Structures are given as C-alpha cells and as structure tokens.
Image (tube, rainbow, N blue to C red; front, side, top):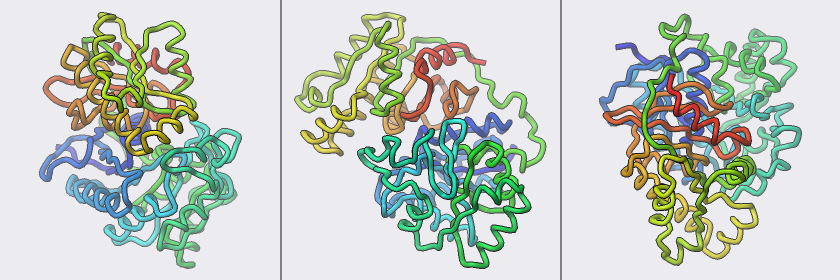
Amino acid sequence: MTKALLGCIADDFTGATDLANMLVRGGMRTVQTIGVPAAGTEIEADALVVALKSRTIPADEAVAQSLEALEWLRAQGCRQFLFKYCSTFDSTEKGNIGPVADALLDALKDDFTIACPAFPENGRTIFRGNLFVGDVLLNESGMENHPLTPMTDPNLVRVLQRQTKSKVGLIRYDTIEKGADAVHEKIAALRADGVRLAIADAVSDADLYVLGEACSELKLITGGSGIALGLPKNFGQLADAAHASDLPKIEGKSVVLAGSASKATNAQVAEWLASKPGFRVEPMALSRGEPVVEQAIAFAKQHGDEPVLIYATSSHDEVKAAQKELGVEKAGHLVEAALASIARGLRESGCTKFVVAGGETSGAVVQALDVRSLRIGPQIDPGVPATQSIGHEPLALALKSGNFGTVDFFAKALKALDGGA
C-alpha cells in the first residue's frame, strides 16, 4: 500500500474540497475524509485531506480537533502537513487560525511556518500583508458583514497577531519575485528575529509556486487552497498523475441544495430560478413548525427526473431579519438541519447526485448522507471539483463554498456529475 505524502487539515468541508481540487490538478491522487477517521483506518492516496468543522467553534475545541487530525495523518506516514483555512482568512479576534497554527507547530516541534490564504485565480491576493478580494480590500468586499466572522481589518499581519502568542512577520512580494532562494533567506532572517508565523504576499499563481518550492522543507504550511499549487512537485514523480481525477459514472436523480447567503450564491440561485424550478426553505416557517422538509421533498418528487433547486439563500437584509427574530445560532441551525433532512429524504427516494452551495450546508448534508470520505475528481469551477463518496453505494457530490463559482455554476455542476470520467 502506498503511503500518503501530504497530510492536510481543513477547517470546513468545502474548503477541504477546494484544497483537494488543487492537489488533484497537481497530479496527486487525493482522498478527503469527513472528520477524523477511526484509529487504524488506512487510505491509499498521495494526499489526504481531513475536513473538520472547526472554523467558528471555540478555539480550544478547534485546537483539539486539529491535533487529533494531525495524529491520524502522521500515522498514515505523511511527510508534510498543511493547515487550510478560507481565502478570506475568516476568523475572529480570538482565533481560530492563530491558536491552531501554534498548536500544530508545537506538536511537530517546529519553530516557523507561513500563512498565505491567497488564491489569485479566485481574486484573492495579498500585497504588503493586505488581503484583497478582487479590486477591493477585504473589509470592503462584503466580508465585513459576515454573520459569524466579520472581517473588518484587511491587514493580515495585524489580524493574525491578535490571535497568536507567536511573533508575526511578513514575506513581501518583492522578496518572492526574486525566487525561492530569496524566500529561504528571508525565512532565515525572520527566524533569527524570533518570528514564528509569517504572512506571505502573493499576487499571482507564480508567487504561489515560488512559495511552494521555498517551503518544501517546512514541516507545516498554513494557508488557503492556492498555496497547494506549488506543493505536488516537491514530492517528485507521482505514479498516477495522469489519472488522478478519474471518476466512474453514477446513475440516478440529481438535486441542488443551497444554504449560503453569499453574493455569488444569490446570483447563482437567481440564474437558476429564471428558467428552472425551485423551492424556498424559510427560517420563519421552520420556526413555526411548518412541514417544510416534507413539502420540499414532495416538490422534488413532483418534478420526476428533472433536477430542482431547494434553497434557503437570502439577501443580507433577510438574513439579518431572521437572525434578529430567532437569534444567529438558531436561525443557522434551523436551515442547516432542514437541508440535511431534505437531502436524507431525497437520497431515500433515489437521488444519487447532489450539488450543495455553502460550507456549513455542505457539512450538514454530507453528515446526513453518512459520507465518510470522498475521492476527488475533475474541476468544475476554480476551487470546486466533482467528487464521489467512497463506499458500497457511492454518491456524486459537488460541494461549493458560498462565494465560489460562476453564475451558471449549478447547471455546470449537474453536467459534470452526470458525466463521470
């Protein structure tokens, strides 16, 4: 059995899939697990990605889960480790990026790593330590209104320093553009100055390849999925690189489930509803005890083999109104639980292909479907691959972070899941 080379820990489900997509593009056969597998579980792959749901839980819980994942990955024989978080650095003043990075460094007995959430292909770039989303700073991108992790400071050095006991530094773009040797020298200088975590600029994919080469000897790397671009080549010739994304075809019905309130998902929902059937899941109706789950399942069945959209996606104002009435935690839980129950009901009625929008929603749906691990297939849109569950009766899934995907993503994803390899 081939031992895994790269072990990854992701703080949410769609982020894990996004990362796995990048690794497959680099020729690494990649499996994503949903949570930490049981001790003794062995999986054959070049790269393993453990998907946690730790982005917004208390920092001490996030640390404990991440250390458990690290222990399992070390037992798989992984040579290097990656802690993956969102390309918009979603976090709070207390964490969880800083505390988890500190704990992983401690466990690996190492004294330095980088933090680079950049993903230029999806418009996330870092310049002089400041994170841009497209042409605007992070705090002007809409992320300042995030209900759980509002990002009001674009300077990642400041953001990370508020979360960590470690000294935070910066590897600037003008060092990175000089190549891997220059980055090596900068890392040595930062280490000598007592820096343990360093934000790394990246304004293009070329910068990420340089960083990947420069960090080949680090035990731990932290960042968004983009940082994985330059990692596969550090492991030499990969045996099945040409077939890393192959997936078999799966027959059955399809459905689209959307829970994200992001701008991108709102646009995707509107595009779908302009010509195709959809059923809206309303938090207030759920709170009143109305049979929304049963109604949604019946709606899907009424349309036979035609894919339908079942969505809780709302505008920012609508989300705020529901949160004010029900509370932030209750409103989110009601929607997630409902979409998870709908997915379970549709699976029982013959649905085998699921397109899911939203990180929290994706996590709830895969848990409801009892999906334990995923083999990663070809890319649908940047950051979003087709996947298949591993098990006796495999399912085809496309798990999308809220802000990812083109406006016609749902149609493209259904086509990809229908096609197989």
